[in-house]
Image 1 (cartoon, protein in one colour):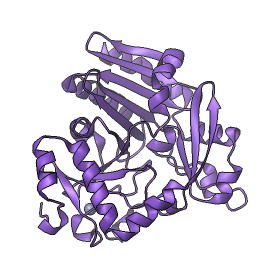
Image 2 (tube, rainbow, N blue to C red):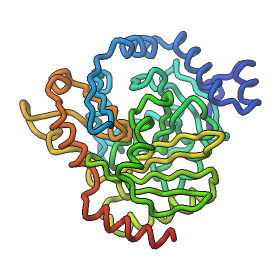
Image 3 (cartoon, helix red, strand yellow):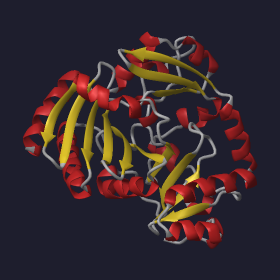
Image 4 (cartoon, helix red, strand yellow):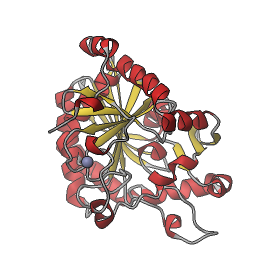
Length: 339
Ligand SMILES: [Zn+2]
């Protein structure tokens, strides 16, 4: 991999923080430095401060809708093969805007500020090499980076066919912890709607259907056990899935020194809901990915923000989530594999 020095943000303070393995503070420092030197980023984070939101509750679970016009590029991105192969990859370091710089993580990833934010601090963590977005090859890195970025950030993965706007370049995102409602709700959801498929003193895996979404929640402090369980879940999902290049999933991950990792795997049946492809006035531009499934739904158009209500939200989340029957079959199969 080649990487020009000028793309690396490095001063004595960053070098010190990284030498202490304090990537959380390094990210915060990078963010504030880029905010001063990059006018597009400064403008878009200022706009985010005044963004309109509205909230709904479903039996104790929160869904928050954010009207965010800057996200129209990402929400309506053409991610078919020919569109992707005809554009310059915006995650390859050669193509980054002049003002954008990042910090190296593990020497094979670069952490960059996202200039079109959903969160008060929003990052993209891209592999330096231009390689396809595939979680099965990089789940270990996903866990490691979430640990490096704790305690302040949540790590996000969107599958190449269900939310990633660069399906051809492996990347994660990170946002300030507790920005996504499910981070608060997950333990309650587990108690109310969970079916435990694996449990011992080292790891716990729960299938959750809350009536809106279908997800798997894994808790463990042992990276190798998490990787083993994830690999089995992935294989079983792949066996019953016709999606390419991998079964449709979005991931959220946090790490805590005392309790270890919390991994949420949203299982998907399709990328975008039918209303996305309709003509106005029936059209609604919502392109659900990990953050939306986590309960922070982004509407880039004002008419959609105004129109969206509990019924529409419920319909859209259910429509893009795995169907009940497949979810139950998968739970049975995985229970056998993990026992
Ligand atoms: Zn690339």
